[in-house]
Length: 151
Image (spheres, rainbow, N blue to C red):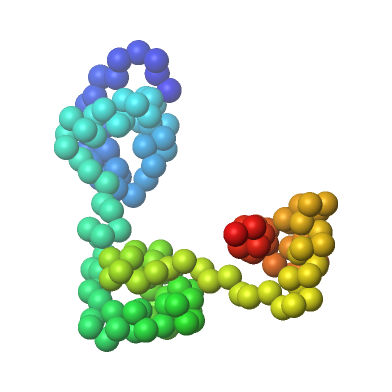
């Protein structure tokens, strides 16, 4: 890597244009024996852009049936199950659900009477994580139930 100004040749430019969409700038810099910043600056100057996923792959639209399924089942089945059913990523389903006005908040399962009693007895002495281990819940769920108790 050179700390001096890079004198770009037409061959270097051609290599940059050919590989900028598929290789990291740091790798191109190593191969061209220059700095990563020099590669990034040159790519900007040449108006070479990386291909994003949305540009390189045809992204299917959501059908009315897909959207109805999201509305009907995200709360009931969870984002992961809906994503699997629709063959989409969890993040894609989360974003679409939010655009549709569907709540994606995970719902906290109610405590049994015994779990409620254990929580009340140990709230001041044990951490949320310790209580969660006994109740087979995560610390956030325990925290949620503890806040609900204080109301």
